[in-house]
Length: 99
Image (cartoon, rainbow, N blue to C red):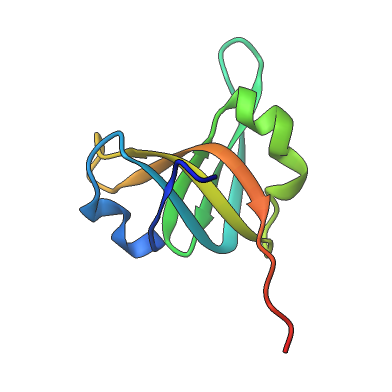
């Protein structure tokens, strides 16, 4: 995820439309969806930010996209709607340091 700029979920709206960012947070909700072509995808809320996980990305990372998971989501900022969104491109499970 080296090409993605770290950002907090709350600050994604301050970024440029199309900018590549990586956010980290806890999945609060997941809404499974189906495209017109019958391909599964999902909308996930991570610390108040809607993350769209479209079919190609969802096929690869679906097992990670569950409520309560701590994730790092890297993707493209979408400012075309009133609320900023993140179009997911890569998803990894967050690793917290153990002290």
